[in-house]
Image (cartoon, rainbow, N blue to C red):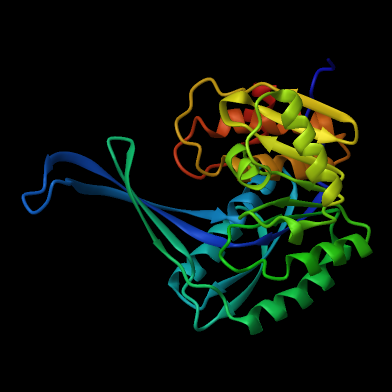
Amino acid sequence: MTKLTIPDCSGARVLIVGDVMLDRYWFGNVERISPEAPVPIVHVQRTEERPGGAANVARNVAALGGQATLLSVVGDDEAGRSLASLLETENVKTHFHKDAQLPTTVKLRVIGRQQQLMRIDFETPPSREVLEDKLGDFESLVDSVDLIILSDYGKGSLTHVAKMIDAAKRHGKPVLVDPKGDDYAKYAGATLLTPNRSEFREVVGRWKDETELAAKAAQLREKLHLDALLVTRSEEGMSLFTAGTATHEPTQAREVFDVSGAGDTVIATLGLMLAAGVNMADAMRIANRAAGVVVGKLGTATVTRNELGAAL
């Protein structure tokens, strides 16, 4: 097996489209139980904000030295402005459509003693008019990038995902999709899908061994006319299925602290490596190492080139 190296990604241009959100963290001490209900009282010591969803994919691309452009919908509100500001500091170019009727999706996590105690979600689907406008922007941006990542969190931003895949194919651009839900027909024609184990099982059913898994993957890949299918399998690593070939990589995590956002890191690293000219099998192996680094961090996080280089 050849030694993996990170290529120069400074010229690799990736367009990320999908559902963005602002991840808010409240960190505090837990010293007693509430007298009002059997719940811990968290004395908040500090707060933190990070880009989440497709925005986390984009910041992972930028953290590894790639050129990240993000297209999405946000509300005309404080959270949307905060998200745009955070991404600017992380060298992500944003094309945000603002919907005055839409509050920006916010996920608030309350952390006590380094454990997540609660998550509170604020979300509303974007309007049809804003989504139609975003499709026009997508068409105009496609030619200026090398690869497209569609990050579907089921919040409504990718209502026109089939049209986006069509447009990408017309322009000869590879398109990677992080899917959501049990209807994968809308992703037909994509270059590669990256479902996790439970998402894949929801679509194809259970399998009893690796042979049956490979057969189910081949069947789905052919049905949807995909070049490849990457199934992330938690502690079982990752499996890449292409025409007549299955490549498996064991898990790389030494200590798992938090798996939230790991899928974002995987598709971001994979897409950037492909945009920089790495073959798919090696890109998958590098993405696996990146995931091994990021699950050792709390919350949605990124992997730097130095961290990834050390992991390789």
